[in-house]
Image (cartoon, rainbow, N blue to C red; front, side):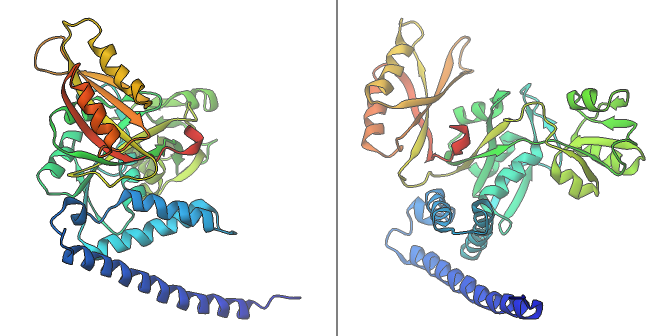
Length: 377
C-alpha cells in the first residue's frame, strides 16, 4: 500500500488541531487549580503559595514514561511535558528563578578551587523550570541565595557537588547562615565540545581551558588559555583556523560548528544542583533529607554517637561533609544527607530529637524528592 504524502499531512494537521485543543484544556484546568489554591482555607500556607511542586512533577514524568507506547522516546516525551508544565506554572503565577550566570560562561568562584560551569546552571534551571518562566542571572552563589531570601526570586538554582571535583564549598557555606530551604535536586551530565568555523584539519589555534583532548587529537597546535569559555568561543568565532573547547550553548550563541562532541576526559562527569526556596515540598514515596549540626569536640566520640542515630533508625547516609563554622578555630559544621525519609516525618522528628543529645544546632536544611538517575545508582 503506497502512502499519500498529502493525506498524511492532512492527518498531521487534524492531530495538531486536537493537540492544541487538549493543551489549552489542560492549561485551563491548571488555572482552576491555581484558583482553588487561592480560595482554599489554607491559602496562607506556604505550600499553597508555590506553583513549582517537585513531587507532583516527578509523578507526572514517571506516569508519562510508564504510559508511553512509542515511537517517541521517553526522554523526548518528558521534555515536551517539561515545557507543558512550565507554561502552566507561568499561567498560574509570575515566577522568577535566580541562577549563577551569565549564559555561556565558565568561571571560578573566588571562594573555591572548584570550577563551576555557569552555563550548566542555566541548563539545570531550564531542565527543572522550562522555558516559560523568567530567569535572573546572578554574579555569585551568594547572590542567588540573597535573591531568594529577599523575595526577589521565588526559586534559585545552585550547584551542590560534582562527581569529580566534589562539593561546591560556597554553597555549603551559604547553607550554614541562610534561612532558605532545599526544595528539589537535579542532575546534569557535563559535556564539552570542540567548536570552530573551520574543519578539524584546518585548526591551528585552540582557545581553551581543557587540554587533554587537544594534546591527543590535535598535536602541535597552539593552545591559548582564556579566562572563560564564552571568551574562547567569541574569539574562535572571529578568528580563522581557531577552535574553542566549550559547552553546546556557546555553539548556538556564537554561530560555531561542533567539530567533536563529548570530548571530556571523564565520561561520567555529573553535577548535582539544588533548587532552593522558602519552603520544601510535601512528602513523596522516595525523599532525601539534608541536615546540619555541630558537636562538642571536647567530648570523645560525639560525632560517632550522632551518626549512630541514623543507623539506629535504619537510614542510609548518602553524603557527609564538613565546613568550618567561622565561630572559632577548629570548630566545624557537619552536613549529613540521608535517603528514604522526609523532613516532616515522625522518623525524622525522632532523629532530630535524638541528635540533640549529642549534637548542637541541629537543623534540617532541606528535604526533596530523590531525583538521582538510575544509571548513577
